[in-house]
Image 1 (cartoon, rainbow, N blue to C red):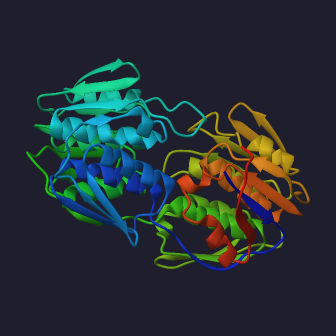
Image 2 (cartoon, rainbow, N blue to C red; image 1 turned 90 degrees about the vertical axis):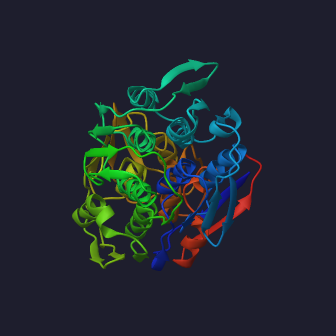
Image 3 (tube, helix red, strand yellow; image 1 turned 180 degrees about the horizontal axis):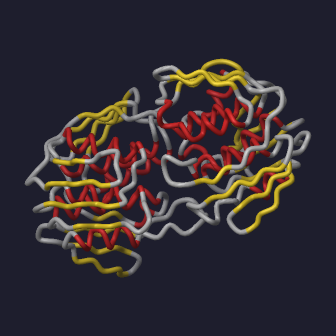
Length: 420
């Protein structure tokens, strides 16, 4: 099993190109099931999770090819609507196939999902939303069994805004008979991207980018092509890496409008920022100021940047409180940061961080995707050598992160490791 060896202390400097958004790709790919024919999705990142979704779709009879970050998806050979445990256990986003399968084929058998080993992420909202569209659903043997002669429009109100549930119900509703209104819908860029893709396939959707979506169902959709939006979390991770190491980093191929909450906090922490139409350049300050953050639904500070911000604040001068209102158990990276010398205390769903003068290299273990990112960032600034184990987590969401970091001047290498 691979691991990273990082020798810290080098300020990062230079330019890095941001890959396509993982979470956008994981919605666009199953959306292809809604039409018969060939779809092409360009700027698709070569990630472990994307490969998992491709394997899941292939198991249903979808033919996929991946070339130069374009995935070509041919749905003409779909022969079953079964999403088996062997595929779904690897990634929670696999549940995205539920809505398209029920909407187009009238039935689905989807394993309850797996993924990162932290925090409750119940699928109840997905199930209840699709039930309201007229599907009959039962849970049996670890599977969601869903069927409907044809879905029908409904008014659906989410008590909590959910990206996954919004995407799943949206994909189901586009082929439902009549009008569907989704209230308190997620407004993340990945959902807006999905809505626009569905419209290009012939769906009738109003309100994309707002918390109320109105969908007028159509009888069928046609294949279409799309360009995957840039990954705002990858962009944010590299900007934090620049701030943490006292460097100057430019991220390109990004939409700064997707990063407003993070950019505001980086400026509060003392960083100087320059934004262009598709770029952000960060100049780190001589000394980081301690800045509290509360992770919240978009456009608030992203929960997927909470771990990276925790690593940044570990070396800020003063005390910081980082709170996560999305997932209350997303602090598995904290014990590993403490191994590197951080002074952090967990209180309920908050981390109280007392900045230290410096971190020291050690052997640490990744527990999930974003925790991995935080440990790599901490290793970049730690004195001596840091080994980050279980890097398969990072491969789920960052494309060749070590190559991109080396291009910015980091001393990081991937080596084969036997330790788990």
